[in-house]
Figure (cartoon, rainbow, N blue to C red):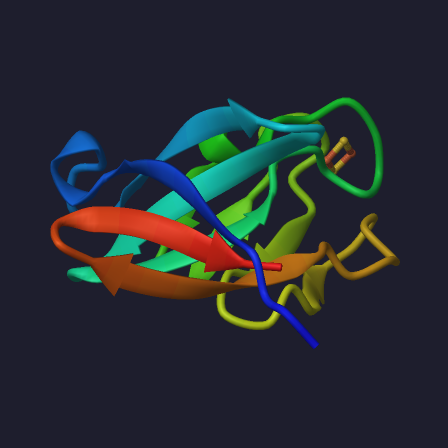
Length: 103
Ligand code: FES
């Protein structure tokens, strides 16, 4: 099965312990740099209209700034309600200073 890599941004585009929003193809994604390690999730909170790239990052947790629900950035698992549904995560590859996902 062929894998597709999609380039999202340069590693320099995302400051340490922050996130940016990236729109590509039909995806709207949050790209996180957690202490130099990159993670990618869907940007939209599974609870409502919150944008996770604008959330508050604490360690490997991102808190949605809408109703303060939170997810584990590494797995997408819900950490704090009112979120109930995990957020989708993507397999990240860093190559030549770029952040890519494999789909
Ligand atoms: Fe994110 Fe409600 S929209 S917690």
